[in-house]
Image (cartoon, helix red, strand yellow):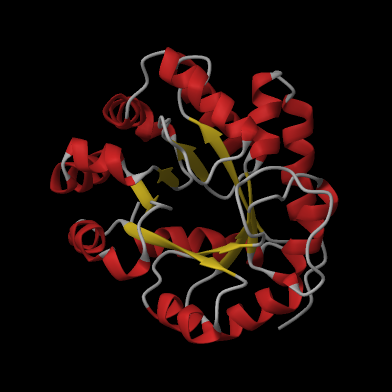
Length: 264
């Protein structure tokens, strides 16, 4: 799927009512043999897209739940290369966009150009690399653009407006709006200005805005889904999959479909 199809999937979710919902899972948690089943379950449950985390030994942006999932995946021998090959093996069955979230070192070890081409062959729609600063992202951005894979930008809502505008101006696919300062993980509450900052970011951006980091309950999904174009849920999904609690995951996805989004 191309970058445009990723944006289109998010807009289609909004058109149907509610907001887009993107679950994050750690690829290979429990073994890569489970990955196809997990992705197809999320697809059938109504996910707009799915974000696959690549396990890494020094995951600076990840909270405890995702860190532990990454450790389990590394113990299973999971690498960036075998995740991409696994996804390529069942890509014909996947109708929703697949996004990779990885750190820079695995990409450099794989080779930037090889990584971009392998993403294209596997049908990857977008890539998130949280430890690459905006000012140093050209090498990845250029390689991915050549194969029409979106390089998805993270935008901290606490950043100065001039920086937000600069990042938004280069955005592809969607903007990943980071709702909290710090690492991923469930939160009980968020800053009171988050919703207003999300609405302001939507006014600035030419692509959809999805809120992520800390969103872990149906109430959070409804709260941020009203302000943004969609939500990304990570730790709660990873934890539920680890416990084989598919009911909770379906409930989170259903909350995104059922919210009443104010008319623009």
